[in-house]
Image (cartoon, rainbow, N blue to C red; front, side, top):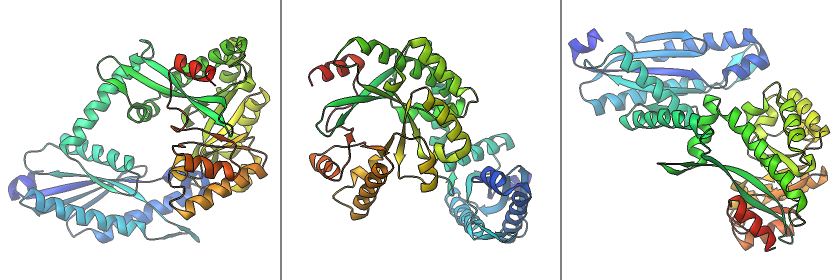
Length: 408
């Protein structure tokens, strides 16, 4: 910082984090992980300029400091961007780890500095930029800018308010109907909404990732399960609703709790709900994260009488051998495939394949995001059994859902 003040030239600091390093350690062992750290350190040192600084802060975190990047901020930013892209390219080349070819990906957060900055401010900005890089899909580079700080301030405010939202009864469940090929309602997916007293209706994408990161998804997820089971029980006395299933999304953090099976059992018993009317939706990435643990938990919950649906199917990296072992009742075709039906032949092929595979494994298949008659007709013609989307109904408050069902 002293040298920057004397030279009046900008410098840059690069916060670097190895993507999915834990997965390598867990699957290949810590000795292989250590080999990767050594190789990354050597590659970083090889591409920086003489006089630049490379450090490992601990774990899989590296910091690179580069000085004398230019007197103007635009010039310095352009130079830093080029240097950051060089770092990305160097690490992205295949790495041989004792005969195992590994493709390492990194996320980089960049903060520019000059004589007006403090070390604390600099590190905070680079850390915020790294957070943005990871949120942008990883294996990328992001710069700090004032809008980033504003976004983080909003995040902090939302976190504080979200902690109170459950107690203040600001969280609500909306329900999107699911229909069969004859367009009869067979169930509904419970979708979380936050009715904020000042911000209005906060979009799920704005608060659910925040709930995941902070652990608030655990009490919220518990409340959703309890609410869904109470609803299932209340529907038993009505001929229009007693056969409907309620689908509930379960987050990875929620599912990985050691007592999750016991939680589900306790909620079902306390509510008196018919477990066959409850369907838990798990994402493909969650299911494949720790297959043996996943299968054990799913089988235990299945013995309670609960059904399972695999959400977002086809967007991850499925292993068909695992799929055959999982006690799945239903595959849900992701909306990204449905959206491009009739416009993209590869999406049509994937969709037809999912339907054929699901039915071959004795699983029901449901498509989400159905918005047009043409999409519905294609899916129905190729054997899809259930549908969900704006063609049939938007997500509805409970009273409107029950009226929708009664209208047939």
